[in-house]
Image 1 (cartoon, rainbow, N blue to C red):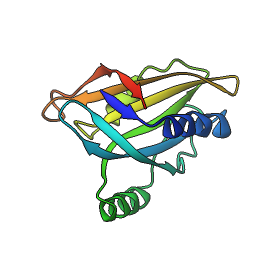
Image 2: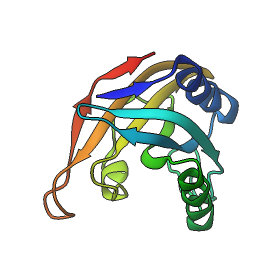
Image 3: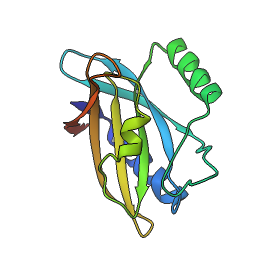
Image 4: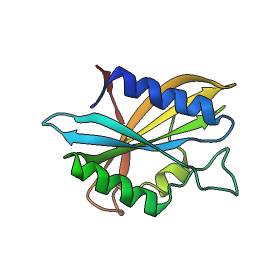
Length: 143
C-alpha cells in the first residue's frame, strides 16, 4: 500500500496537467512502515526525453542523486516515482516496465485526458532482481 498526503496527491496530478501533452515525472520520498510506503514529500523532475516526451520520460541521474541526497538530509528515502500518461490509461506500459529498476518502490501513473488528470494508479515493483521483477497493483490511501 502507498499512503500519500492529499496535498502531494493533488500536486502529482496537477504536475501532469501542467506538462500535458508531455509526460511529467518526479520522485516520491518518505519511509517504509510495516505495511506501507508512506510519502512525506515529492520532488518534481524535468523530463529529459527529447525524442518522445509525449509518451516517454527520463529523470537526469544527477537530479536523482541530488534529490536522494537532500532527502537523506531530512531522513527521507526514495520510496517511489511518478509520471503521467497523456491521453493513455493509468497502467504501466512495456517501456515503463523495462525502465523500472527500483525494486520495492512504488510507481505511480496518472492518466491525463485532454489536459485534465483522470485516474491515478500505483504499482509496486516486486521481485528480488531484474530477472524476476514484476509490477503488482498497489492500493493508494490518501491521508
